[in-house]
Every structure is written in structure tokens, then in C-alpha cells.
Image 1 (cartoon, rainbow, N blue to C red):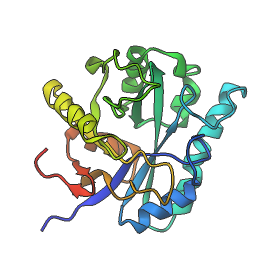
Image 2 (tube, rainbow, N blue to C red):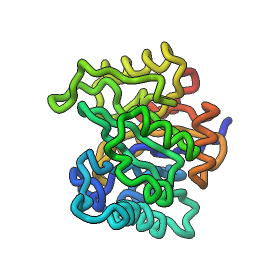
Image 3 (tube, helix red, strand yellow):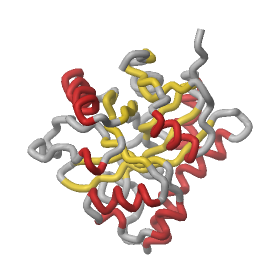
Image 4 (cartoon, rainbow, N blue to C red):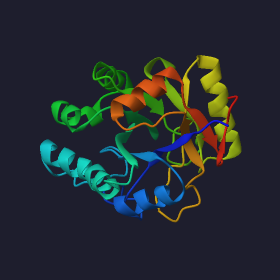
Length: 236
């Protein structure tokens, strides 16, 4: 029987996401208790529902944003649980992308990256060795302009399963990934440690993922199996 290591790839905390309710430490404990081997924090970036003071200078904003990840990482020290860094970047029309494989240095070196169109944003992320997946691409909500579709040329992947999407929205994302030859990610989009999405999403790998670089390599290779409503999918 195969041994899988599960990783959550879309999660928020109240230190950086204004809509979240739990601390970084509480989110780490929730996913450890759920049997996960790690998680990637993807707090809302500056054009999204961030809790970071936008009036701060760029350097201070980025350090405040990154501090949530550092707190989570400290909470997991010595446990074997991997804490990784990512962002959920809003680029307009209510659309967002999950970004993996970047770090504080990247953010400090790219002031006002939050204001760039998706094309330039993706170019810079790729130049830095990162990976871009569209979050909940077919989520239909009042704040999202549904006339604006995904831009596959500026994506590595799409989030085919989001716990808080409806079944039809997730199915559309899965069909879109297949039609455009994009990699697939999955995320709970959880904002609270007691949330129903904990343990229901993410990717499962046959190896441990301990660094941002290892995560990007695994995502690019398609090594991860989608966790869909708590079940590891072997054949997506």
C-alpha cells in the first residue's frame, strides 16, 4: 500500500487575512491533528482582504506579511511538520492566484508587485522560480466579475478542488485544467482552525516536502494527488 504525505496548499490566518479567525499557531495545530505533513500559508495579499496596514512603507508591509509565516514555522519546529510560504494575490475583477516558491527577498525586491497585471506578475514569479495556480477559478460570487475568465497563458495550474466552492464550480475547474493541459492543485481555503475544510483538501505526495523549492518541483512534475473532499484521487 502506498504511503502518502498530505499538504494543505490554501489556508489563511488572522494575522494577515482580515477575514480569518485563527492564529498561525492554531492553524498549524489543526492540520497536524488532521494528519497532514505540512501546509503552505497563502494569506490575502495587498489588493485582497489583507490585515496588513497598507499605509506602511513597502519594506514594513512585506515584513509584517511574512511574519505570519515565521510564526507558523516556529510553532512547528521540532514536530516534523513542514510550514511553507505562499500568497493569494488578487489581480482584479475579484480574481486571485495562489503563488508558491517565492520568499521575503522576492517581495522586498519587487515593490508594488501587487499592482501589476497578471501577465507581468506571472513573469516575475516565474523568473524567480515560482509557480502560479488560479484560486477557485469558477467561483460565482457577487464580488467576482464572471465575464472575466482565467488566463491560461499566465498560469501553471488551476485549483480544481476548493472546499468552499460548489460542486459545479469545482467540476468546471477540473474540466478547464484538462482542456488547457494545466497542473491541478487543491485547497480548503480555510480561515479558522475549527473549520469543516480542515483535512478535506490539498495534495498528497509519495515523498515529504520540506522546502519551497521542493514544493515547486513537485508541483511542476505533477507528482501530487488531488485530495477531493478528504479522499486522495488516484486517477484525476
